[in-house]
Length: 162
Length: 334
Image 1 (cartoon, each protein chain N blue to C red):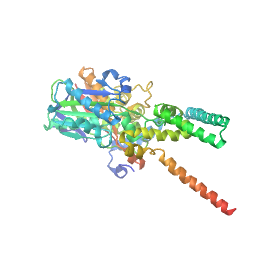
Image 2 (cartoon, each protein chain N blue to C red):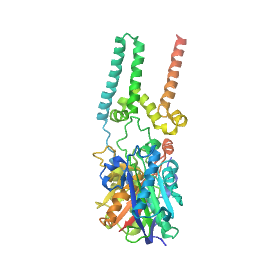
Image 3 (tube, rainbow over the protein chains, first blue to last red):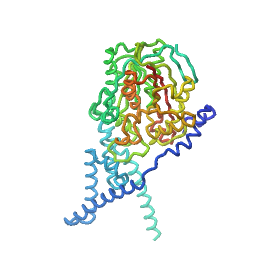
Image 4 (cartoon, helix red, strand yellow):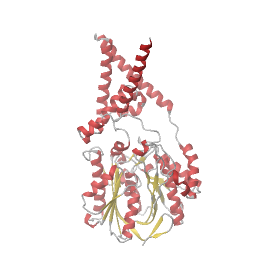
């Protein structure tokens, strides 16, 4: 969709010249993304979060929890930690630094829900928080469940063949 | 009566005065290079109950300051013209509603201040109003809420992105002698060169800026050398360089007096603002503080003020729309 695809013939000569020049200028001016730096940061922080999760899990096993329960506790711990850090305005700064390092683990999911809740508090509990809390996380939930269902179906069909 | 002197340009027969201005800025803008020029610096998170209410209060405060400076009553204003970036331009509407005077709400995104100036100047010259108030605002947090992701979400901004300026600017336009005057203006047309990256609006707006500047030069038979300052609205570093390249391709190479409000308002090296400032309040507040004070003290006498606006909405962007851009030029003389 463009406002002027049908009106190119109405363009002045000046506009036509600017349009041509702009094509090359636009390419040349674009700054290079610092990929290596971002990848290193994401790896460091993301890996750190996983390490912390693993540490909590091992600690719980040490306290005598079942392995599966220890995993759940570790997940809940990371969610709680993210929620607290988001509420006190620290998590967005870490996220800005780490990028995918905080976005990909469960911390990114927790952060997206808590930040939406904070954001829409001013519109009230129903139309604000209620309606908007899954604004960012909603697509993840929808397509996460849908793909889980599809994988489950494949698993079921393979079972029938066997 | 005003006279049309080019395809998009109007020359005012009796120049219209910018009698006074008021500017209100947030803390980050206050810490920037222009901090000392703003009339009032407020805590943008706590000045009002919500971000939107803060913006409304900042908007109204800018008008109040401009009125106070010339000891004018709001009853003397025949027409309020204002706009902002929120849906249904509520910041301007709610701020101006307290004055209970005639009001025109306008929108051309970040170029709204120039559109307001042009409407006020035309109205005054036509004798329809004697004195107008023009005011425009933007707020970083209210704009993020509307156009982007939640504030506390830890996502990275693109390397090309800009920071919306939290500020408002208000000006009283009338006929008093001795004040800086609007002598002519060029109303921009929508220039759409099929940019779709909403994280790079400076580049998308650069062609509109170049087009309006050149159109104004051709109509008024002037060039960069005839001005002390030619200043665009919010192209920021990246868009500004694109605009410079476009102007150079048309033969405008000696352009040491060319600048941009988005570059002026922040120290892009020291402050974490991406390519620079953006938002309707960017050009409005920089004009109403820094530029107007330099005009008033006669350090500048000929200024071409060219705010730039990106006219997309989140909806058109999600429908893979391009970013139509506009730039309006206002020539001010001392």
